[in-house]
Each structure stands twice: as C-alpha cells, then as structure tokens.
Figure (cartoon, rainbow, N blue to C red):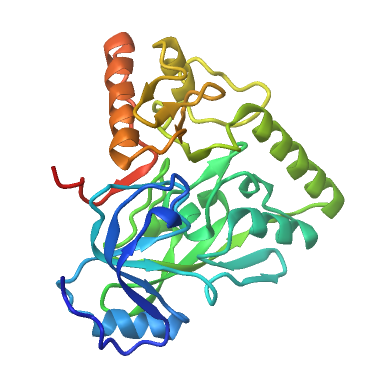
Length: 310
C-alpha cells in the first residue's frame, strides 16, 4: 500500500479504513485510504499531488453500493461537509454532490420549485447525476443543466448534459472524476402542494418497499424499455420485481442475505450477511430468472473491490 501520510491536505486521510459502516448494506472490507476533503480546493490539491498511478474511487453515501469483503485497493474519496450546500436562484437549484436527494427536494419545494421526484430516491445528488437516477416519470437528466467535477489531475471542469450523455442508470463521467456539485432547473409549483405530493410518495414507498431493512434500493435495472414511472397506469409486465417474483424468488435467501418478501427486487442484509452472501444471492437470482424467462437482469447496485482471501 502506497504511503500517503505526508499528503498536503486539510481534510481527513485514514489508512485501512473499514467501509462497512459507510454503506447502507453494512458490508465491505477496508479501503487502502479514505480521504474526506475539507473543501473543493483541498480535493483539487490532493488529486493534483497524488501519483496518477494510484487509483481513486469516489463514494457517495453508500446507498447503492456493495463493497466486497476484501475491500478496495484505492483511495476512496467521500465528500461531506463543504459539499452539501444548496443554493436557489430563480428556477435553478445548485446542490453539492453530498447533498441528500430528499433534502434537495424539500428545500426546492420550500421555494416553490418542483423537484419532487428526488424525494424518495436514496442517496445524494452526486450519485443521482452519475446514475441518472429517476422516479415518478422524471430522470435527473430531464432537469440537469450542468455538473462540476474534479478530474484525476486535479483540474476542475464543468460538464454539460451532452458531455455526460445520460442514459438509463448511467452517464459518461470521466474515469476517476469526482462530482462536486450540479445545477438543475425546475418548474414552479405551490409549496404546500409539492410537500403534500412528497408526503404521499413517502407513504406509498413505505407501504411497498422494505424501508426498515438494510437494503441498497432496487437491486436490478428493469429490462430495457420497461422503466418504472410510478404512475397509476404503469405497466408491470416486465419489471425486474415481476420477473423475479415469477421465478419464485421472493424471499430467497443465501447466508444472511435475502430478496425481500415485501418487494422482491430489494436485496437486504437480513442477519449479518457478508458482501459475498449479497452478491452471490444476486447472481443466483440472475441465473434463475434467465433460466425461467430468458431475461438477463442487469445489476443496478454497484459492486466494487476484491473478494475476501480464501
């Protein structure tokens, strides 16, 4: 492991940092180093100083992530205070990458701006941009004006919508780039009506999803062409949860991992699962869905790092 103890930083740099407590699934081994920069200049200066051969992995709030049990051979960069501000100017909202999606939705509603689709999306704005997160018929790309990122050489760039090239659950973010903020545009609405709509969304989510369990949101992407809209007239013929259910995998277990009884496209840590339990169960589900329907499910949860030594 490379020695970074003399790095010229103002933030916090921790060696061999266990990552399990930073992921919603509560699994994962250590990162070689975890860097929590103080601010934009601190992040930029660190990446400019860092040997370009040392890999970096930007990590959000860990809501859509499995870190394997052997950990990550890289510098994991996690943004916190200094990157969670929210500024509103007319009909645009600029939010730091560490700002929680739900917080952005609520603050926008306070100002009479409709970003209600973000309210029930787990995670932060950086992840929403990177994954082009969406719900209730809206995607982040539908509102995105631009995003700023620090590149691997420490330079700060503004990325346009066309440069990011957003698609279903993916964008063309440069390798090693760390998103630091995003500017989105919203339509106007009545604050009371917007908050009421979000309250209804939260209630529906809690009724249909295992929000009290340790999960990472939806496990698999919906098959191509069958994205969830959340509308009342939504068609469920080829949703990921439906093909998993049809394959008889609702409640399926492996070790401490389980496909939720409440929503079969939610992989949950039900009783001390390892990352290997969770990923292994996911692969079991993919195989059995393919065997039963010919459909190849694609992971929506990101899996990173090395398996544990055997």
